[in-house]
Amino acid sequence: MTKHTRTLGSTGPQTYALGLGCMGMSALYGEVDRAESIATVHAALEAGVTLLDTGDFYAMGHNELLVGEALRTAPAARREQALVSVKFGALRDPDGNWGGYDGRPAAVKNFAAYSLNRLGVDHIDIYRIARLDPDVPIEETVGAIAELVEKGYVRHIGLSEVDAETIRRAAATAPISDLQFEYSLISRGIEQEILPTTRELGISVTAYGVLSRGLISGHFTRDRQLAANDFRSFAPRFQGDNLQHNLNLVDALRKVAEQKGVTVAQIAIAWVLSRGADIVPLIGARTRERLAESLGALDVTLTGADLAAIEEAVPADAARGDRYPSAQMSHLGSK
Image (cartoon, rainbow, N blue to C red; front, side):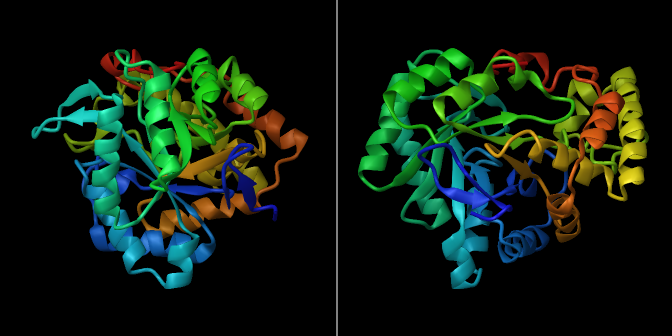
């Protein structure tokens, strides 16, 4: 295993130290460019990235079709190295509204059948429900995925945004490779109970939102105009005084990055990488330019002094505003 390779838990596959989160290529961040998105996936695979993360509800299947096209048109050697992680269970209507989560065993298998077809693959490498269905015991949902593993349609079982008790119950049902959770300098809720639990059980964390949806990327400006269909236009951390306060934190982080000779995005991603070999950050790059910048974080070594300076610039719990609108916060395993 090289310095750029990590293993997803005690039972999961080896993967590159950074994964590619593909959601933004289809939805929630304004206009998308399909050709550039596919080129970015190809560039990621060429650079050695293996883990591609998607969801069947990202633009109602659009993202899976895009990832499938990118894999189909990639060189065979690169296509074979790819590990596809899929989230399922979120219910949508034709207007794009959210209708809760469905973790019933029959629904799990139904969602998987459609995902396999859209992706154009014979198996899904890691399969996970996006949020806990409060009406279905996690044992039933995970048990259904385990049946798909037995039949060869899924290789590994993951979790997403669930609490410590749910993690334990799921792990007692079937082997869990990784837990997907938002984790960044300004989203550190997993450090109290979630991360100790995953480490006790030998489960890795695939961390999404490592740049907090661009907020701490160094590229987001106070006067940026967001499209109505951009998630950030109604996300609390991007609103009014919250935004001003949070960008002040970014300004402080920028000074640390400049002293280190790296970009804000690179030091923010490097900080997540430094939190442990059991954490694989998912970078949400939508262009080859942003991808190249993010991959540069792998060459950033943070000393003890660097880490202290980062913590001083952006202390834990320093951000203002929840990471999701209030209606969605109740579905999260940690704030």
